[in-house]
Image 1 (cartoon, rainbow, N blue to C red):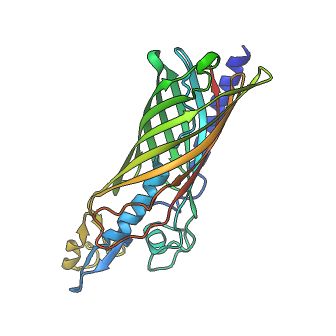
Image 2: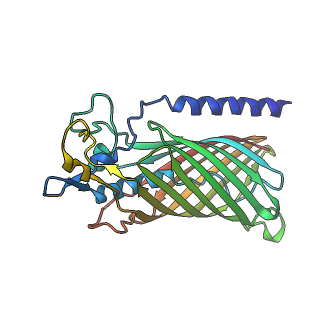
Image 3: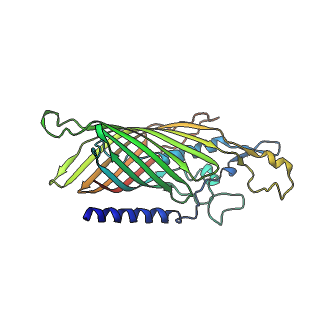
Amino acid sequence: MQNGRLTSFALVAVLSVLASSSLAHADTMDIALGRLSLDNGVGGRVPDNDSWRALVQQQGAALAQPMLEPARTLGYGGFYIGLEGSLTGISSSQDYWQLGTEGDANAPAEGRNRFPSSVLYWQRLNLRKGLPFGFELGSSGGHLMGTGQWSLGLSLKWSLFEGFRRGPYSFIPDVAIRGAVQTMIGDSEFHLTVPTLDIVVSKPFVIANQLTLSPYMGFQQAWIYGTSEVVDLTPGVDAYTEPTPADYGNNATFATVNASRSRGYVGVQARFAALTITTAFTVDLSAPGDVGATAPLNLAHQWTWAFGLGLSY
């Protein structure tokens, strides 16, 4: 009965937070691709693909599903429901964020976000279900605060080694691999999908027969795929009311983004009865790639701090 009440309370809290998140910031960080354009020298506009690539790569690093679970699975029949959040640092002082996001109602006439957020905050509802043979299936739905963008995700984890607690093999840690994918929805101008592959090592420690602490560490490889629809590069000009036939040529698609990130992370999970609290910090291990860019993008290393509160049965 008590577990049922806890579950009901958790569901109400999750739904309340997700609903309120869509009202939080008036969508100041919504992407405005039409502003990322360059003069073509003959009176028209062309896509600024380097700015687009930089924006999508930093957005993709934030979308990547963080590792908020140790290697040990829930066990056959186990179930987890949790509210999770992640903060990812971005280069908000760069033009591609100031020009490429909507800003507030007092934005300058030329179209520039004066105060883009220095972090992207994803909030997700995460569900996981234990399966036989050391497998665990997960799904999630999330919202990017300050935008109209949402995410859907799937994951599958396989624990290669788990459960060695006593005897001559008690020193062996739990080891698992996880494949996951997150895709962004809610923006009509572009599409973003980020598959990830994780390798995680953890070891649980039981304290006073009630609290279980599971520190863990691991490696994540993320692939960032971004494509655009046809975008109006002169959004301030209405070709129907202002007779400028040449403006019809200022519609274009941006170059496809195909990039990758190598990331490392450390985290810890605390479990008391059904209550689970997890936190992890992730950082790029090498300079972000700039596949297809006309010049090096020199993107900053990004970090992500993730945290979760959930119930495990």
